[in-house]
Image (cartoon, rainbow, N blue to C red; front, side, top):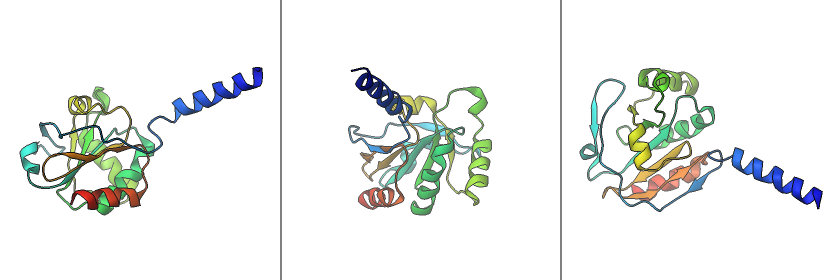
Length: 164
């Protein structure tokens, strides 16, 4: 009995510690919410810029070391102008989007041509609780897929093909 309890406790701890690290795909959302935000270069971005076109919203934080492979895969797959990187972190020390973009370019060893936007309230409105979380939005503004955690590149490609 003691062994079963110990094993159950260990499994529970491991399951909670991996939250956000393993992929899941939730499709419970309807439309991507409206937004009006500024990227790392001071350019305004709002939902009207993405009307009638599919796009991908990548939600993460600069401190998330396990998120980089997903951004790298998305950068390989998603055309320029169709991917937006949103920061979920509300703490001031993580609000510098130029620093985040520079860090990602260095770690991925390439230039990134997607906007990086500080957006904790947008992340909250979408109930982003695990990172990275990726929203694949079709040309009608509807969220079609929203995987979170580490997601295989082939799955990301399939999701993009389904909305583009």
